[in-house]
Length: 469
Image (cartoon, rainbow, N blue to C red; front, side, top):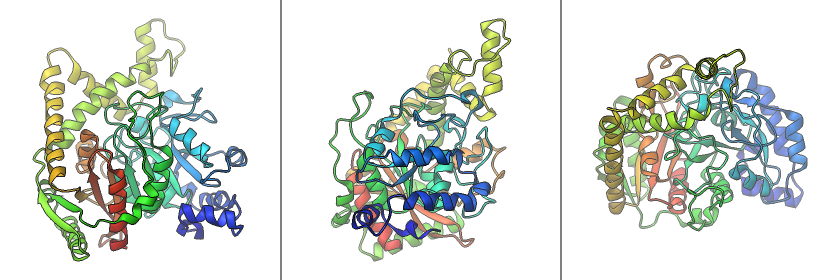
């Protein structure tokens, strides 16, 4: 790993100003890391070095000047293609760029390249990309998580100091956990979704990968805030997240979700309890709370996310995207383009979502899932009235092997059992490295907080990071 990996973003800027580092230092370190491991890891779908150098040369002299950012390939940028990991979008170039990317560029950062993902962000391992799987840099026989596995792998391998992903049910936090990183999912609406290709609009949120909480706080401070081009973005003011890290957790209370503990077994439960004991020993006030619907979170999420995906992906009809030559009727055009352009996992989710929305089943599935989601939101809100933060493991297990769950969709979906509640409730959540398993694989702790309480959550995360080392 290049020595710059140990340099926080704030210090990088200070060293540039002081003249002890050249602004292009991180760009060259990124290229060196890419040369060392990209052929094995396959973190990027699109990586044009000449384009990256051009973007760096044109970058603003702002607080992030010289910082390369890896970007999940479902976040659009004008300078290059956006594929969403799908053949149906091969060659597509956006006429505009995502608000989050524009804000990063205004601050001086530049786009290093577009990273691999499960097709249309539908997956938990980055094995469902039409362009091949990404491997975990810590163990290439294992998955990096998903769907933002390419972004996680890029940061874990030292190819970029930070990366953007999208989190619909844990797609930033789960790969962060598998790759030993910090993964941040903001409150729904805290970061503009303009330019994020929609999967499930009531759940999607752009998130951040970083090596430390402080760096995630810096990036969130840049990309957060209201966007007049996104009517769902919040008008809540954006605090100085980086400055808030110094406030610590004095007087704050942490809650362990009883139902999450019941889902843990063996080493996973033992290590989580050891982590809680370490935090308690460092002075954390911890109590047990209840979220009775948590064991049903994946079922609720699957119905709602697939229903929204069925609606959102209707635009990929072979006319606007994925045009198929030789079809004589509109039906043939639809069938041929979607049949050839979409992978099996995307087709599965579209069909399940369409079924849940169909006449005779709408109330039985979609309606009941919406009511269950409302119940979960109330339960989480009630728990967060008793405590300031909720603690769970980020994932129920460490990174699994490539191919291990690819033919078992249910087992794959259940890897997100602890992450989907934050999306269903619209609250912020943070994944933080929490030691290693007996096999030497990363473990991760998740912190959830009240809506728009990222400031307090990041301060708690910084404290936990320090305690856990």
